[in-house]
Length: 113
Length: 111
Image (cartoon, rainbow over all chains, first blue to last red; front, side, top):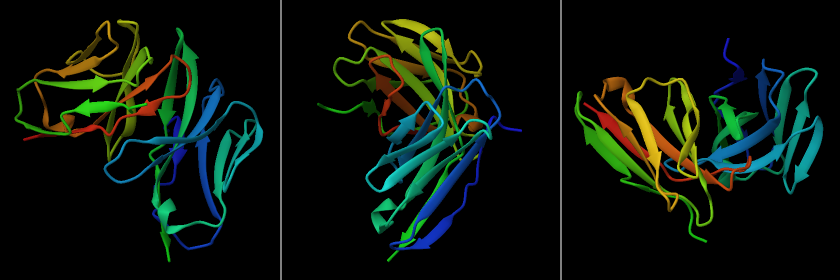
């Protein structure tokens, strides 16, 4: 079992839909929880991060963390075709002064007009 | 501020050769991390350098090595290339905290 599990998709939704992306993890020592967006042929771009259970909102994006269930989610409201990308979750451990992320495999999202 | 830059963007090598990839971090960032991204394994941590010292290393063989210079630029070297080393190699820079900024990557194809 991988430390971080993420459904690769693809997830195809119509424009305007609410998108739910999810990851589960097994290591309760993870301290930070992040979501990255990666467009084709580009590097990942940090969307949101949090270190506590609960919700964090930023515009159309909401990150949710449930440490007791070892489950994190990213919700995208009013999805747009420009949201079409691969979304990567990452769980971060701090060790020796470093922040070491363990990434999920990524979920491919397609938002069609 | 300019973002993270990586050179070259594309590279084709043959098995047994070695390769050196370069990463220039965002100005003022002292930490550079390297990752390998493949369809099969996803994005995996290779190593991190901070102020010219390797702080952490992922689970990769010794053929993968790196270094960081006094201006924070970093290089990654892979010796004795194998077919399985074909991947997108990404570097990310940070001030040393949890927020990393990724470059566009170098796509390496080993034939």
